[in-house]
Image (tube, rainbow, N blue to C red):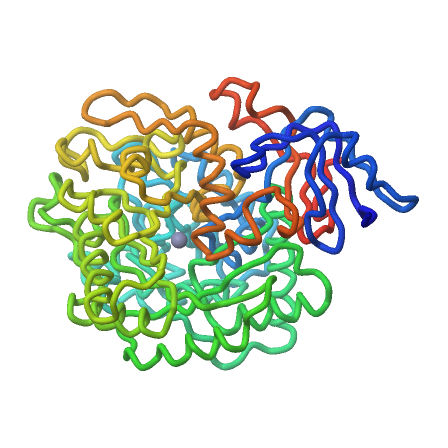
Length: 556
Ligand SMILES: [Zn+2]
């Protein structure tokens, strides 16, 4: 009999193996799961060098698969001033000035996490307000949703856009009646000018803004700094039980840095980096996606995905809607791609065997994405393509059955939903029509149609910690009115972070279940998750993470 390198005993294993849903102990060797069974069965595989871990009756799960994050910016933001808990100008001013004193040398003070009421209820955020917060140094703050950046006058001057500037389609430097920028910068094509002036040079966001590599190429000093950021990010993932991540922005630069980190033995989490095509790119750039897939194709680091953004976000009116917003009667938002262009990209990428992930938040963007997937089927025939739609915050009832009919994977974020408790629900007449609410953030409704549903954080939009997201899914805040109850049962919610997420990346044969032969990727929680009340799930933590048979986090 093979000797185990690691044995975990006295556990409450949830295996996601239909024939053996629960077990007590597990043996690992050679980066794989050797056996799953009782303490006695697994104990028989102990040798003199076996490490034994007592799970102390806590839950043991397959390692979490985080299906939608932005690793580079997430890592970078770990070190920035987070204003997500500030909602009045006095607090913001005190915190920003304290931060300024700690950071005397950075060219542009950069904070994150702002909610739309950052300066107080009903107060719009603009350069004048931010000038009061920080009059004498360039200062900018990113919205929690990462779709808007607000900058003060000094920052706009430094970036050369105080009098406006050219931006790509779908982005906007909002201009005031005085002919100067207001300080509100909508979407990445507008705010990249300001981020380029931050200490990190905005390199973390290139995978989002253009999908290109740094130009001029990063210096060796910059590469080393960026690798340190990515290492921090990987450690942060391990701490929350994540053993695989799907990045949702991409460029070759990130793949190269992660591949160097892998060679140095520090890639402690498996990850996929997509190719990101923008609406201003020629479709022939898909050849680069093919090149990325060819060069990076290991169990630890791979590509093979195409990421597209079809619209923005509801809160700023950039999500593409089928009819005007209730509070902006002249505006529906606009899809970022023309239908013919989008369909052509889907047909070509699908024919190349790339998996497609599309950011689609408004009901028009979701419909346009489904139309693109339908066009791909019509042209290429039905393939096992597992194309995904990211977010699906607003869905027209006619499109609900199309998700299943087109075999789409739904990728949703419990903590983005108003019932998740982090973002306040919109007031009546604000951004959503009452009749849109029943199918808004409709995780459970979508799940019940048989669509594979996967969960994630979209870190750094919300914290990457998995248990708070699971907690939101199993114990949503009741909103009443026209909102529907989207409560998930615990096993389904866990599957969305494990077995279903493995299916979504074509890895169901090697990940997402605790069965012999699968990768030794697993997590031990701080308690028995099946015994605690749903309301307590979000407060659980991770005790130990193992990825590829190696302990990547140990709370001690
Ligand atoms: Zn995202």
